[in-house]
Image (cartoon, rainbow, N blue to C red):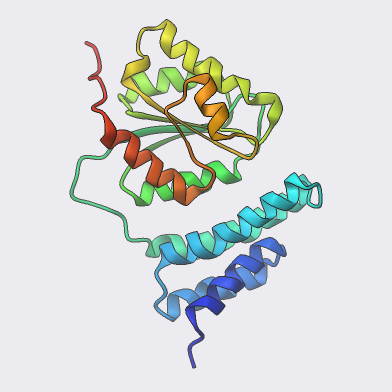
Length: 224
């Protein structure tokens, strides 16, 4: 007999939080077999578990090794669920450059946001982690992106985000791009202080904020 949605979501969450790769894989397969929507399984199962692990990291109950094992369980389940995601079609894709700023190699949150934005119909240009700051600007210009997503998990690299925004201003192209921030130490207050356009505290919220930013005001066309 098929289990209830809530039970499957709880096991997905717990598998990540408790670093149980076997449970993550078996529950992801169960989710698909039971007809559970893959996006639901990710956002209300896996992401919940990863967010809880992030809280434990902030409280110094988990450390980097634990987060990495949590991410192993997360990625194992994502590999099963990803092919079943229903991606939005029927409209021109919005270019998005995303990456973890220079000095930080933690990319779990960034990878979740990337998946969610991809599902939502954005055209993703993933620069990876420990990205030289000028690369964000150059890539955004190259692909004529409308959105730049900056991530960090470290307080020591937060100010690098402000540097990217200053680079855009110095080139006179700040109005061409919406800048969205995310990561453990980031807050709305910090985003406001450095002049970012938006902030999201989790992957699902990043999609909502990104759509609002793009819809709120037309972005200036690329100069030729």
